[in-house]
Length: 523
Image (tube, rainbow, N blue to C red):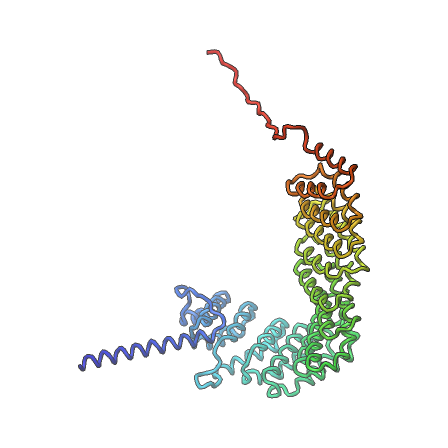
């Protein structure tokens, strides 16, 4: 009995230990967003890392820091390494080593088990201060960029004066990263660390000339001091185009944010939106058009956005951009089709693209915009495109021709007046890949418009001998037999059919292949 209790107690201890290990592993994995697989056989131990950092050259130190970073990301701990890094690495002038040190400081634990800042971090903070006042602008900018990711106010508080000094640095690389650093610190800790942040950045942005630094400063005002951002925008609305693409995109984001919360503010942004429609950047003009339509449904705004979309459609060479713009135009067409009819001809210029998907989407949108005012111009474009498919060696030219024929068929059904001008052109394609679509279109025209039957049937007889596929010939014979009612036309049809069929017997001619007979050889 005593032995059984002992074994039971031992099993309980083992199970408890296994459970604790499992929970610890699960907690460790939950706190990691990225897991790196490392080769444990080749990974350096803590002693080897310390040895390399103390006695190695820069290459050895870089390799050791890399090994530490990968191991720590996989859940390993190296408590002794921090002091060796502080003693032998923080004062290096090697830029590659400094970059790896930034990664190390980002992931290394900065608090003990009681959530108190480690004493070693005082020395680390001093190293940060040295880099913030370094003579090399790259070192300063890199450190400012790293401080954007820190979330430890105890480390950031002593660095605030040095960060403010960087706002007045002579080099724009330092200033733009300093503005970004101030933004993230104020966003995370508010007035606790930077109570004068908005006033500081307002003064900075009014004196700044670099586009990237100005954009980062406006990003701060947009998120942390919206009233200041609105006042700055109102005073510099005529200079938005000069401030770069990044600044314009921030202005558009501010516009959507403010107008979504208070629609009465739309009038304050209309002028800036119309100015950004003509921006040289495709991204800015696209976002401006989308923002303008989302804020206003007035015909003037829709017309300006549609003109911008069609301009992007015809000026951009990227097929993905073209498809995205066509999707926007399709969404706009659902509610503003009358306004979009004004830019239909500009839209059809996209048919010159060699991409079949772009042509298909363009035809889909265009067919919904065809009206009595523009039907003749649309049909002329479609006829010209059909002829172009025959004269040029286009990739997937047959599929494109089929889509054009179907579009012309749709136009002819909706607008009978143009049937006479297209049917004769299409009948020249009865010997091509889209012949079946053409003959079906001819059958529909002959049925719906009796006044066109005579001319269409005569044109069909002229092209009868060029037909090559049995289904097309079958439909053509049915049309002739059904609608040839006059004796003269019946005679011409019969003679054409007899000529095309040939003389009896109606069997396929077999070509006899001449075989080479070897000459006898004398033995």
